[in-house]
Image 1 (cartoon, rainbow, N blue to C red):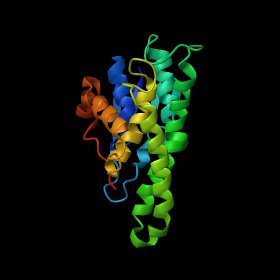
Image 2 (spheres, helix red, strand yellow):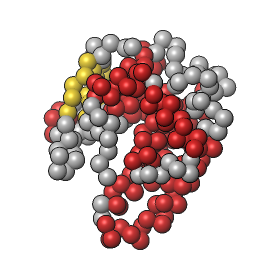
Image 3 (tube, rainbow, N blue to C red):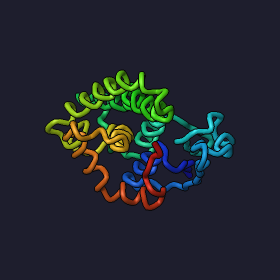
Length: 208
C-alpha cells in the first residue's frame, strides 16, 4: 500500500490533501520536527537519504520531491482525473505549473524565510527578495484572474502544487495586493478534502 511519510509543517501536507481528494487508500507515517532547530528527525533519513518530506513509498518505489510525487500519484491512482490528458491544450500549462511552484516561485519565499531569521544582518537583502516575491506573486495573481483553478475547469495537480506558494505568501502577510491568489487560496482551504487533510496531518502552520 502507498505510504506517505508525513512531516509536520511541511510540503507533505499538500500530498496528504491530494490523497484525500482522490480517495486513494494510503497509510501515513508521521514525523515531528525538532522544536528548537525545526529540522526533520533523523528517522526520515532511513526512508530517503535526504531526510526531508514529502516522501512516499509504494511497494518497491521510494519517491521524493513534491512535483514528482504529485505527478506519480495522479498518474497511478487518479483514474484519469486531476490532470489534462497528454496532448490536451491545457497539458503543457499544467506541466509548467507543476515545475514552476518549486523551480521558481518558492525560491524568493524561502529566501525571505531564512534571511528574516538574520534580523538586522539580513536587511540589505530584503529589497531584492521583496522585489522577486512581488514579481512572482504578481504573475500568479494575473494567471488566476477570472479563473477558479490554475488549469481547466476543475481541481488538478497544479492547484495542489501551487498551494504551498499561496500558504507561504499568507504566512508572510503578502497576499494583500493579490486578490485573485488570495481568493483562490480561500477556495482551496474550504474544500472538504483539504479540511480532512488538516484533521489528519495536524495544524497547517509554518514558523517564521
